[in-house]
Image 1 (spheres, rainbow, N blue to C red):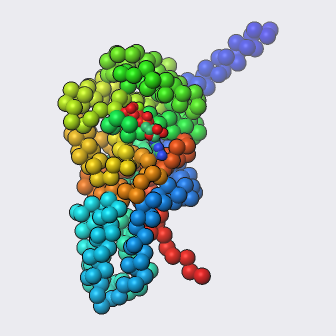
Image 2: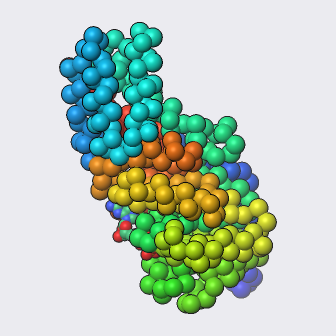
Image 3: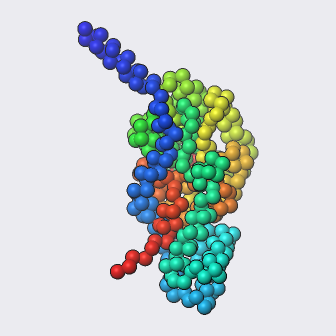
Length: 352
Ligand SMILES: Nc1nc2c(ncn2[C@@H]2O[C@H](COP(=O)(O)OP(=O)(O)OP(=O)(O)O)[C@@H](O)[C@H]2O)c(=O)[nH]1
Ligand SMILES: [Mg+2]
C-alpha cells in the first residue's frame, strides 16, 4: 500500500515537473523589471561613484544663468566626458539641451535637470523600447527551453552574472539549467556548479578540454529531452575580441545550439566590465560582428565612476542594456531601466 502511494506521488511529481509553464517565460523579463523598479535604492547605491563624479553638474545647474547658457553647456559637456559619456554622446546631449534652451522651454535649474534626464533617457530608449525590432531592454525568453548565450572578455563577470541570473529566474519559478561552456578550466565549471547549488538550478555535464560547442549542444539536447527545463544559460570562456580563432569558436557555439534548438539562442548577451569605461565600445563591436548580440550586461558599476559609458554604449551601438551589476550579491544584478538610471545619476533636489 505504502509503495503504491509513493509510486503515485512520484508519478504526480513527474507530471508536474514535465509540465511546461504556459506564458511564464514570455512575461518573466517584464516581471523582473517591474519588481526591480521597487528596488530603486539598490540601483541608486550601485551608481554612487558615477553620481559623485557628476557632482560638478549639480553645481553648474545651481549657478547657471539664462544669459550665458553657452558657457554652462560647454562645462556640462566636459563634466559628462569625465564620467565616460564619451565625446559624441556628450555632444548629442548638450545639443539636445541647446535646442530646448533656444525653444524657451528651460528657465530654471529644475527645468535644466529635467531636460538633461530626458535627453539621457531618449538616448537610452531607442534601443530599449519594446517596439524597436525586438531589441527590448527586457529579457526575452522565447521557446521551451529558451537558451541564453553569455559571452565576453576574460574576467568581465560572465559566470557571476549567470549565477545571479539563475537566482533571479529560479525565484520567479523558472527551471534553469546551467551549461558549462568554459571547457578550458575545471575551476570555471566548479564556480558555475556552486551557483547552480545556490540557486537551485540544474548543472549540465562538464567535459574539460572538450569542444565548447559540443558541451553546449549536449546541454541543450538534455534540456530538450527531459522537458523540465525552461531556461538554459550557456557560460563561455572569456576571450579577447581580437583573438580570431576564439571568436570563431564562439560563432560555432551559436551554430551548435541552433542545430539542436533551431530558434535558439533567443538571447546572445555580451557581458562588459563597467570599470573599463569607453574601452568596452570596441569589444562590443567585435563581438557583435561575430555573434549578433541581442543585448548587453554591464557589470561592476558599483566600483566605478565611469557609469556614463552605459549611455555611450547604447547610443553608439544601438543595443539595449538588459541588466547592470551593482554589487556582489545575487540581487545586485538589476534589470536595466533608463528612467531610473537617469534619475539615479541626477536625482531631483529635495526641497525643504
Ligand atoms: N563589485 C562587483 N563585482 C562583480 C560584479 N560582477 C562580477 N564581479 C566580480 O568580477 C570577478 C570576475 O567575475 P567572473 O564571473 O568570474 O568573470 P568571468 O567573465 O566569468 O571570467 P572568466 O571566466 O575568467 O572570463 C569576480 O570576482 C566577481 O565577483 C559586479 O556587478 N560588481
Ligand atoms: Mg567565467
